Length: 212
Length: 200
Image (cartoon, rainbow over all chains, first blue to last red; front, side, top):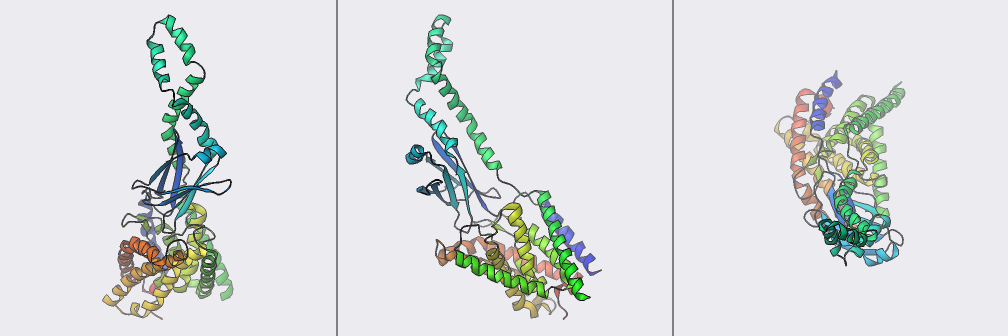
């Protein structure tokens, strides 16, 4: 009898709480992605609010050298060009964030994820004429097109494609990185409540054994 | 309120773990057969309530309900909070297994303290009980932030800076918790006075 009233009290409370769930905040999360030679880092609390002035340190996973440190801006963003030593030594970068109030997290950016593309963009930078030559190729009459097409062909064309893909894939990389975060779902929560009730059952069993 | 893994020094981790162990042992010992279901209900409430984000203040805060758990459970809030935090750790990676003891201590110790501090006031009716409930909710968060700052002070930042940051972030929560605790207690006093342990 006592607990049925209590149940009547607690259940609506739980339901109200469950219905207001989508925003929550417990830990800080960080994700990083590379976009044409610059590594972008975004730091958020798990409710989606940006973590301002959080301390970021970038270290190499191989020899634990600290390459650079910085603070996030008001949007929780921190961007830095890929350090030369990291490029040279093919470091996997560990991007660690500490928000100062006991929250800490890190993100591993593998060398393979940022090095290949930068190599291409670096080669591409000295030749900004390549897209225009492609345009010229399209505009040119067919006889000339053949000859210019040979110039654009191969190496350069693949560079253009990769640069374009890189630009287009940037936001996708970002949202993929973002989605690695496991958000509490209703199933998790209900499952946890089940665990709690199960533990209560075990406790009740042992206590009742003692009573006998 | 959840300190992440790898922030604290080993001595703090051990101290927090020891306090949490002792508290849990006392809590389990004091837990009698009649109270088991009540404890588990509050554990569930704590588990879910601390998933809500309160969008106030500079930091990220969420309901803790430490004061309420302290009033209703006494020492048994240690095992309750331990279980809820453990589940949050393995399900959502909040906090961490190594810092579990410290996190439990941060939330449960002030709750127990408030329980002893305000226990006599709860036996009185009316306004005094309401005030006690508010203070209980308020103080438990304040002390929790203080404990958290203390734990963090031995790491990179000094105590003063850490405590300023954390207490400032939790000021809105202190009032919210105070009000929630007050309403819950006055409601329970009307509906379910046995649960408040008002009568001896």
